[in-house]
Image 1 (cartoon, helix red, strand yellow):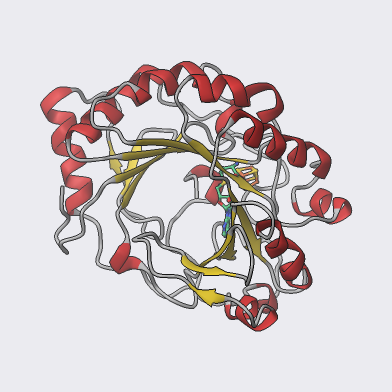
Image 2 (cartoon, protein in one colour):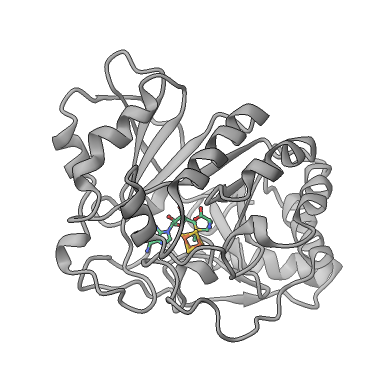
Length: 315
Ligand code: SAM
Ligand code: SF4
């Protein structure tokens, strides 16, 4: 289905939970989720997804919080993958639970995963995730590869003064293997996490540190894509601060507590809990029609108008 600006909306991101087994400083408060959230049941999520697929959604990504901590999520994957018309089912995950879940997820029909990895330094990984262990994330990435949840994409939030010195090392993960290393500009969401203005670094820094990058043709996604000479994989730049990609936006989001968000950076939310059949379909259509043309500018000073922190929306 098209929105009012002629964008074909084909991608639904579903947050399965606002909880997580990490506490990344740019995403979650240190104490985690204090209040109990009334989560949609897995059956409700499936019903909403089915209606959305009926309206032209072709790709679903499960996210969170951490999607792998939601009990029963493998069965949900199996049911989602059977929806006629769905072409791709993916996950965004911190990978910590992949060593025990990757094969099962592949068996349930998950096509591939994106894994978040901001640093290759164990001490820094512990700091940015507030307690995570790098070796566990790397084991999860290996498990994803072995299970065939590929091509892998590695999401790296670029944070000035924290990991900009690691741009070449992170990009080199795409040298031998056909993965996409994606640098994502840090978005000013939720409570200010105590980053100074230098943290909100433009992806221009990646182009400056890697002068050999060759631009690849657009693939319809939101990332600018590049290749290093001789590399098996690619480098992607996602630039919500330095280059607005709203004209290419093809997605809507479902929060874990049952609200559709037409735009990540807008307060507008459309409740769908308790709706069925025609009423549910009409509400999803409303969310698609309500997609704004673009969101307001984002910077160290101009914070997102999302009205929620990232772990409550799903990225
Ligand atoms: N827990 C999973 C993970 O980390 O991959 C999925 C949920 S997480 C909210 C989804 C993505 O959002 C991750 O790649 C994370 O790095 C990114 N993210 C979270 N907060 C962000 C922020 N303030 N700016 C940019 N990216 C952010
Ligand atoms: Fe958890 Fe992902 Fe947020 Fe980190 S970015 S706290 S892993 S939801």
